[in-house]
Length: 303
Length: 323
Image 1: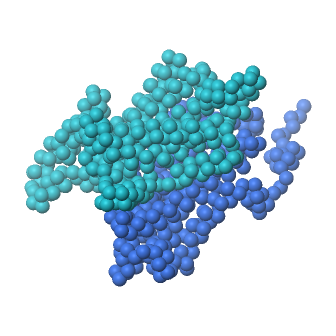
Image 2: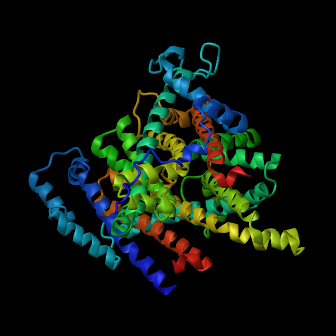
Image 3: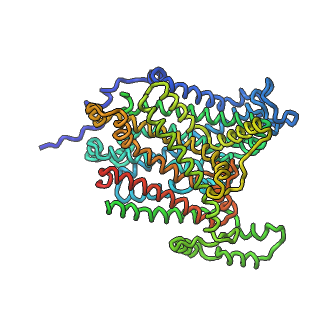
């Protein structure tokens, strides 16, 4: 009697690919733009600020850190479209460069925090038992811990600076992603194809990466998008408190610190424009995130 | 149910201990010495004996493990210790600051709930109409707006409006008075912060109400209720809303717990002396006892809120407690 060797992966006759028409990046994008007009507005907003940050060196009319004591707290004019701050720095230029800071912090924190959360969440659900119980307690601790103490500690120990701000913002994102991913992963832990993969003798990492992770991709991507917005808001708050990015680096939260309140009634543009920049960017990210959820969540798709 | 409650309560113990260990270690990793600051603040020089005496007085000359055991033992007995910075009992320091934060959080919750639930429901009922679009836009904007910026703008607005009406700018006073002593003055202080925080809070709860309502409205039992010829009002209020509110309650609970310790930025903008600012001061002063106690208070509130929400959930949904 001979025992048939297991079919090597890749040679299976029935694969999922047979049911999904191959679609390229551009066709998916065009489809998204046509079906989700509100999401498209979001993408446009994000693109405007993203490109502004990327090309700030070329489009900013002034040096963002150059003081001009002859032009302090000047109202918006042709020379300074959004006015100048209390040190005579051009607000438009600082907003453009601030976009760079916001996106660097937002994207890095979201990707690092989200990915760590993904690994921990799927791992926790897959292994279950004691590992799950232990990991969940650790995540509980971080989640209930006051963010400001964590941020203050990171800044006091490592010093202020963009990379430390990213650390302070990333840590609290990890458990939140892990929680959501874990609950999605728990639901698919016992489905037949994971059992099948186990029966075939696949290793843990292969099952987790090839079979479980793709199936929690939808909630993960939605969460990742909202994390970018939340990280930008957190960076603004920390910089506003003086715990984030430090002068003279251009950052939106920092622009609202000090001068903005002091000169609020005489030079309101100092307070208004950086806040608007934060709001529009995060608004755009959230619009995009909502549209992404509508596309990725099959339960919402029929609605 | 009893087993579920007991196991949930037991699970809070490792979380509390973990949070205690985390703040204990973090505080000691921060470079600096509270005694150097305390002794040197007068600008005078001091001897090493004085420094050692100061260390002994506040107990930071002992080994870490002993300090940690003392900290946990104190917490277990409800003894929060003496503030290393002010020398006053920690409980007293917290008690004077706590009411402000609590009041803003409660008021923000009231504002959020009274806006979020009706608007979220209407938005779901009128899905894809202009009302829905408006409510969704306003709520997405609420999540996107930094609370501190809204605070600055609202202060600006109050200043300008009062200038325009009375001829001179008006700002609420900074000194906090309890609600029962002078309700008008109290509300004039906490109303603006509560609205600024409440907007974001309302936005989050509104989105949750809307999506939960949309899900429930598609359930078979709603169709049954309609087929029975029940009044739409009864279907919405008694059948749909009641079930849709479950996830909304969770969101409200989590946000509320967060607000107690998370108002730092808002307190900064409005010059309120709440728990959030006290936390920042305590860490910056390297006041170990005060920071540790504050963290434990905030963590306990967060854990208790989660526990209550979970138990409430289990009580309402038998599938959870039986699993």
